[in-house]
Length: 274
Ligand SMILES: Cc1cc2nc3c(=O)[nH]c(=O)nc-3n(C[C@H](O)[C@H](O)[C@H](O)COP(=O)(O)O)c2cc1C
Image (cartoon, rainbow, N blue to C red):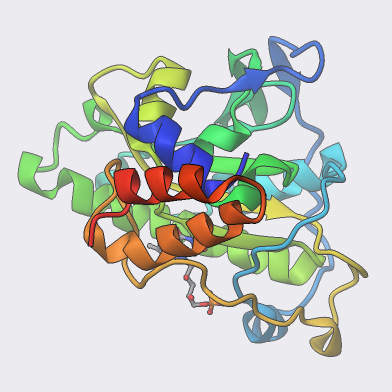
């Protein structure tokens, strides 16, 4: 689904998941993460970047396992995590949107629990590549776990914790020949609806992961060229504010190749106020 269609459906409150592509298991026990070897930290930092082009090929389960462990897995006795959280609240849930269904990553069990037997990928962001990339992560803050944090600080602290997790994912991807991009241009209401979230659960950010087009072995020279940032500098919340108008106009221009001029004008004027 293209960006413009998502924006229109989002504005109508009608951005919904696609049907599941298979039989979603109720839970998936992940194999142990691969903790040995791998690329050095400094080389991974050298390769870290955002990508917006993906193959649809799924991640092998062992790779998904290691990715999620790197993101926020248990790395110590006593259930310490790879990412920090204020007062060790561990308030961030990682939702793993796969073609078969959307799952919550359970770090303690190192398993996935089914939340929705549908393909939520297209709901996880306005950019078109999120629909076909094999994996979109959604970071959700559970405010009920942050009782010790002052209310006014909860979203800030949870956002910082999400940033730490997201950077873990970036580094894992850099070291594993995977592409990724953290995304804030998402429809939080549509995601919350699709996942049936409680009022205490706040959708913060999404992150796409997948193999890049072409070779997937990470080397300094194989670093994919950066795609131009398709949208303006700050990222849109649920509505479509004027500062995203240029991106929407670009989407409308692309849509004009597929639809009649009159239809394009109607769409552009309805979603892209200047
Ligand atoms: C909080 C945050 C939100 C972002 N949201 C988006 C987004 O919605 N879409 C997107 O394509 N990139 C998004 N990005 C990625 C940035 O555009 C990217 O990090 C920046 O252009 C620098 O490029 P680099 O990551 O390759 O160094 C976001 C990054 C951050 C930290």
